[in-house]
Image (cartoon, rainbow, N blue to C red; front, top):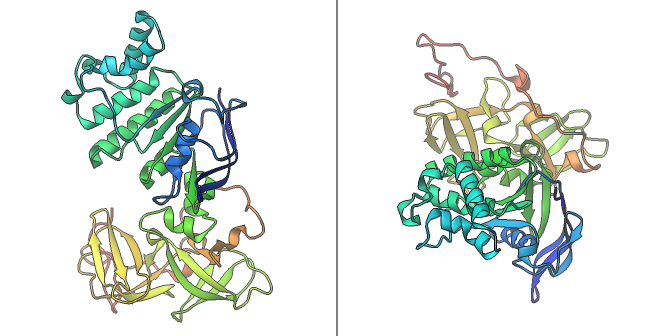
Length: 406
């Protein structure tokens, strides 16, 4: 069992500080994912844990032992890199066994370890093949197998799927999740820029930005309760929309007067003195829906992207403002150039002041609970009447889904 702790860890290259004051506790058996924009230091932090980069300041502990000056080979860690880095002249078995041979293990031990790893990764039929005879996904599994045979306490993954095509990324991601399930006592730390990987694999996500930690939490907690505008727009695709406005009415729920002249009710409390405070109303594209009642946003569709399962609507792409995106379920043909009225449930809306969520201004909010389906009839929405084709209708310039919604 290996708990991992970072205390005020920092990294500098000369006068350039890449990471500062990183405080993080990782419990044995956790699957932790580091995400953040390019250049935020997530791979550097992983390499510092591995011992491939020197820690400039602070302390790293693994299993209660300070590791700052311990060489990589003695840290009980195995790392899987973005590049497969396989020896082309060695078979799959020999690639996986190489580190064990260097460590002086017996032939019987090496055979047992490589057979075990091959079975776990479904590589048994390919153990005698050279890397050139494997697909990209199989080569990445060999690289993972090379880590498994060492039986480390901590696994480090540095963007291991970024060299694979879309279909192989999905398949290999599932294999990594199954691998973790088969080794519940092993700690895994995973670096990625892919939000799908982060949301589906992680027990907790660490969002890095500006040289530090922006937020730590379960995937859905970061999605539904981001602490800052940065996290709100970084987690989720497309990014969260931000609509500027001012607090109009305070209380258990807040009424916001938006700059465009509309109003929005938000299920976030405000207090006396918050009236007229400038805020940004955050609403995710997938939380927006068409309404016949009072909208929180109304405009003409500039561009559509029909993806089958969903349709993306783009507004304001021809202006100097940040575009607004709505993500409607199902197929919505011929929307370009039409005027749309959109709303969202009050519990799905967010309020930010000076970049910080109002949920967090008095400290951490109550323990997170996943949001359930939106209450019916909220925010002035009304059901649409079906037309004779069984779909919904388009009338009075309002866009309603046409045909099946999946």
